[in-house]
Length: 281
Image 1: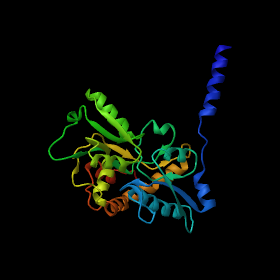
Image 2: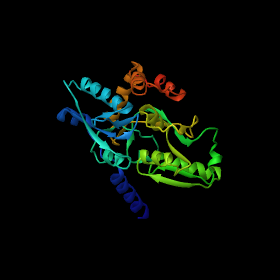
Image 3: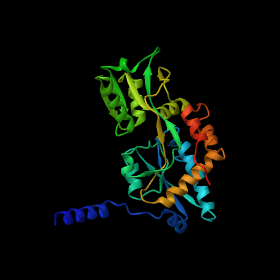
Image 4: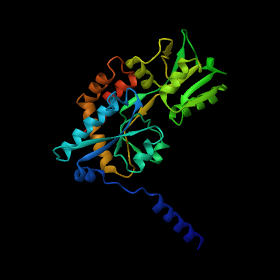
C-alpha cells in the first residue's frame, strides 16, 4: 500500500511539474507576427535609441532570425513586435508567453533553465570592473571598499560569491539600473562598480564613460549568452538554433558584431564561438 501511494504521488507530481509544450511556430503562421522581448538599457547588446527603437547586437540577431523564420515557414513576411523588458521581468515574460524570444543580455545558467530555455550561445561576455584613477588594482585591493552592482543579476551573485571565496569583506551596494551605478561611481560614492564587460564597453562606445573612470582589462568570469524562449517547445528551439547556426556559418553573426560594436575587438572566446557553431545540416 505504501509503495502504491508513493508511486501515485510521484506520478501526480510529474503531471503537475511537466511544462505545457508551446506551439510557437504555428502561432507565428497564424498571426504573421513574432513577439520579441528586448532590454532598453543593455548597451551595446539590447537598448533603445533616441527615437525609442530597439537597437544592439542581440536585437540585430533576432531581426535576422525573423527573416529566416519567414522563409522557412513559406511566409511573405513575419512582422517583429518589440516588447520592452527589464532585468526583473524578462524571464516572467518568456515563461508567461508574453514574448516568443527574449533578445537581450541573458547569461545561460542551469538555475534559469528550471524556468526557461535557451538557444545555442549567441555571445560571450564576462564580469568586469569599473575603477577610478590610474594604476593596477587587484581584486584583493577591494577589501573593505564600497562596491556597486546591478541588483538581481548574475553579476551580483558572482560578486558576492567571489568576495566570499577570497575571504574579503566589502559593502555591496545594489542599483536598479546600470547607469545609476555608473553615476554613483562617477560621483565618488563607490570605489568600484561591477558589470558586464559588454555594457561597460557600450558606455565607452557611446561616449558616456567619464574620463576619470577606466574599465579593467581582465574579467572575473566567462559568461555565455543565449536567446531566451519557453520550455517545452523543442520544434521552436530547433528552428532558433538552426537559424543561428546558419547566421554563424554565412558570416552574418560576425558582421552584426562589427556593425554594432565597431570599436571593440572580439575576445578569444567569442571568436571561437563564431567558428564552432553547430552544423546546419
